[in-house]
Image (cartoon, rainbow, N blue to C red):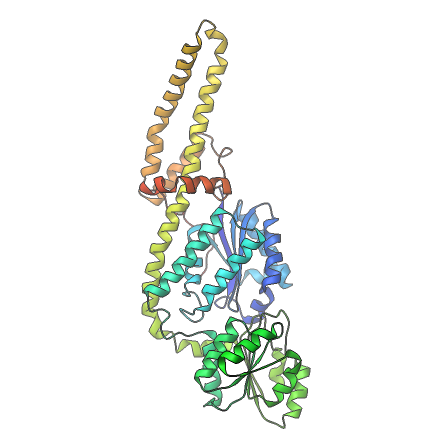
Length: 460
């Protein structure tokens, strides 16, 4: 039987120096998805990579073999030994894995509780998997439910009130260091969602920003027009750095954008004026070695944690409310998932019984040479009726079991006693999933098993 497996590192388990090595910008994420799916024990895959986490969500056959393979793929991407990565890795199965995804999507596992960017990041990760063809019915349902749950948490709780994001925290840190920001010249590198949030937070502080986009200059122009700033091309960045008081960088570049040697020349031309550099990208946009330069004050995402802690106290009560809502949303997914385990078992049980009836009839066909065709049909009908009546009670008990452990025990007992393991489709195979969808309504009317208990080591 297949499992849901989630592997990952986050700000809770790994420092930025490791997170940036296993970060998977879109291009790398696509290649990792293809490599994961080429592994026999991995049937479906979605990869989430943000500044605070890199996570693999996998529908797998042998979970031990799949975890070993996935760990190796992630370690190779980061150019590190698996033994170096494993001490920072969390591994979640089945219900725990689904719950973790729901909490991540709702912003409950974020550095900033309730932060809004993660919803869009999860959605884009799922869309990339769709484009790469690495999902099927199971992952499609899982991620649709997770995104819906995240949306509901934000609409039904106050978890996102007084919206706080990594960008607004970064601006708050700049205020803490420099005081009033009005009149300061700020360079925003990156014209994506984080760059836009940064621009909004700066505008609220009366700052007119300079926008730099290393790939899409037209998006920098768009931000400049919306927030009353100025857009410059990437090759003009050194000259702009000579004039700036603050540089805030948040691109998806896999390499440093601002290097130590380049910035050293800029600082010489600044005549001793200090520069605050805040890097909220993972992998980092700014070479950590620039902190060695006189006059440069460098902060990265891990340095934002101190500021974050002052913003979460008012959200803790709402987080408890949101967790309760997540559990209710998770139950709906569990009921659907249960049909993927129960329905194939019932189908296989019927098929095994009918196959035995056909085999016995065939073995005795020569003994009934005097039977008419009508008699043969009656005999076949009687045989299949006996099978159905014999199996009716165990199937009814399976459908109406009202406890997770009890239902799972029934399923396992039927598989073992009737030798169904070789017959069963994987619950994560598209064929079984489609069957589950067809019988979903009927199955939900019965009390069916939630997700099987998580196995193995877990850490959140």
